[in-house]
Length: 218
Ligand code: KMT
Ligand code: NI
Image 1 (cartoon, protein in one colour):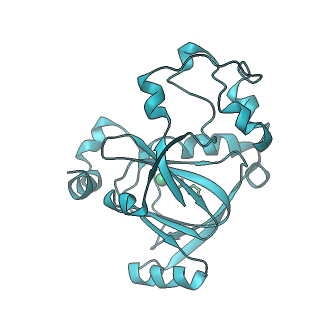
Image 2: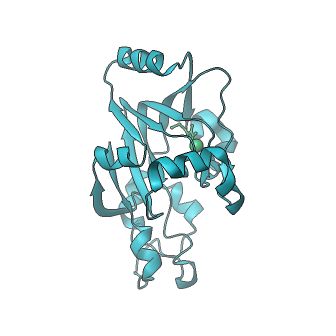
């Protein structure tokens, strides 16, 4: 696990100068399919000035501002992190919290086929849930982004044996990284309640959102 502020914070305040790059005029959808080898070059690729604040490169690139956060900082946001090299640790945590069910999801073009791109886009739409979201990474890598107290994005990079608990009511989003592959165990109590509620002013009055705000953002 590594947590850091997402680089859009600086970018949105000061639109960057256009950087010359071989990938500068290639659509993000094309860049994505180039995979990991092209990723480093794509970091500096900025399609057009007008799009500078909307989409600087691909969501699957690191977007690393270099400003790190510790696990203790995540805890202040209600986000709990565990490194569990053995699944027995997950069993223990699950029984402590009353999680009796689990399944596994693989997010990759091979596994999901034609819907992969749409799925990844929908995971990346900012949302909250009315229950905790617990994910235990079994293989591959991915990023969970959560909102800081100041409403900036904090990017949490997860890999095999990382387990994360996002509290009910926190605004977040998920994406695979440039390798386009992650396998994760999803823990749930009875019926999975993962309905994403997309960020909107109306959610300010949602009881689960209010519970989160009063416990962690005040
Ligand atoms: C979610 O809710 O965003 C997901 O389940 C994403 C895949 S699990 C790493
Ligand atoms: Ni979610």
